[in-house]
Amino acid sequence: MANIKTISIIGSGNVGTHLGKAFLKAGFNIKEVWSHQQKNAALLADLLHAKTCLEIGAISTDVDLILISVKDDYLEDVIRELPPNILSVVHTSGSLEMKLLDGKAKNTGVFYPLQSFNKAEEMDLSDLPFCVEASNDNFGDQLFELGNHISGHAEYINSTQRAYLHIAAVFANNFSNYIFSMAYELAAKKNISFQLLLPLIRHTALRLGNEDPFMKQTGPAKRNDLNLIQKHLELLQNDPEAKEIYQLISEKIKKKSGH
Image 1 (tube, rainbow, N blue to C red):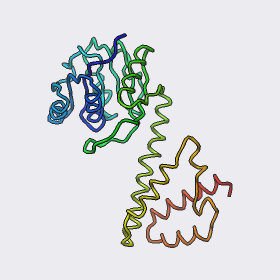
Image 2 (tube, rainbow, N blue to C red):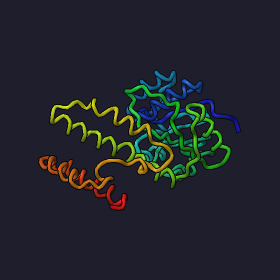
Image 3 (cartoon, rainbow, N blue to C red):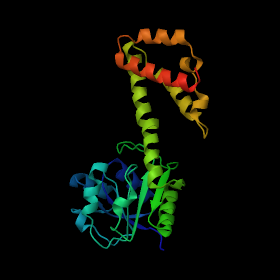
Image 4 (cartoon, rainbow, N blue to C red):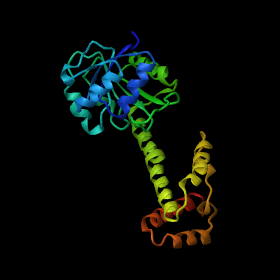
């Protein structure tokens, strides 16, 4: 089976923008871009030296791959509007199954980039994991090669694995970022610069490896330092949300530590 060379992109958001730029940089030809917001589609198409498609049903099927990168809430509607006779189509969702694409093309699959994207920021995708799933082995090999062209880090992940991986990513990224925001607010209330915490945050992330991160757990709950925990809770009396989360996580750490 021939390798992927020409790509059309459905969606002009964070993921579609960064993947489109990465494809172009890697030497792929981006043929068309469609988006719910035609202005954004035109902007991205211009950036990728591509044409703007005005209707999903009119998108050219004369490409090696159509990549759908839209919000999960819109994905099924977009899929229903796809034209017939598509050679290959994938979506980029972390949580939705590949089977949504059944019957829509000769080759169907998932090309999920495991990262948090913001199209306003420049990003280095050289170490980005691409989680690949495909309706057949030949197409899977093509998607694997596509991921390796961008980052050299593609892996075969099925729909069930990807759903749990996405949950894990929410904990690792979304929830941890919310905790960082709470730390920012706590420091700001006492006129303390959040910059003082950045070396600690970087060190915590950089020392993670393949082992269970709990093996590197430290802090008063890990030590079962009840006096210090109580002192912290007293300092948080006027911040019930922070107090609740501090208490909940401390209890979980103590329990897992055998205290």
